[in-house]
Length: 227
Ligand SMILES: Nc1ncnc2c1ncn2[C@@H]1O[C@H](COP(=O)(O)OP(=O)(O)OP(=O)(O)O)[C@@H](O)[C@H]1O
Ligand SMILES: [Mg+2]
Image 1 (cartoon, rainbow, N blue to C red):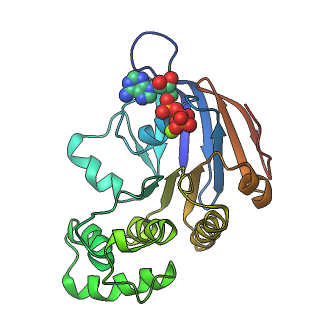
Image 2: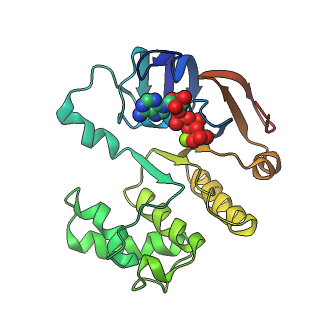
């Protein structure tokens, strides 16, 4: 599902942010990516989203080669991916329903389909009954649930999460992780960047650890390493 071969990303002079990385993730896997601040985790996510282009190597995601992808293909490609961030990135002036429906409107889904799908996905993330709330009227955990609903509403092959629990308390973090696991259980490949040692050690998933742009360990049912 995700295949990086000898991938390098340099932002300029100095050491590359991602440095000759090889990584293979099968369909349906759940993978944590950990590592110190500045180790290249977010850069890796941006490469997968094709928000950045690599400066070396090759990336294949969901059957598509990113280096040779035509510009006009990129938005279609991104529909195969769902993404959530630490800061939720919701539309502040739109209610919960609209935040999720929006992702469907931009890809031209008929209103009839949207009206059916949005409640389904809000139910799935445990937010049925909050349709009309504005983001500011929700707790952090609830806002992240909305972001997750939006990320999965189009049934992506892959869900990318960059520090999804970075702004949440431990209990809420556990709930969000349980939700990610549930989404993974339905077949979505999930890649989660996190600094949350307790969660990583509790969940017994594959753990990829980065340091200075390099993958320094990659373990099945792994543990959190400081670097
Ligand atoms: N737009 C940019 N321009 C120049 N350098 C950048 C840019 N974005 C990131 N970098 C550098 O690339 C390296 C990796 O950054 P990246 O954001 O990928 O790290 P990270 O592992 O996500 O860190 P954190 O845990 O703090 O989020 C860092 O040295 C950073 O300063
Ligand atoms: Mg980061």
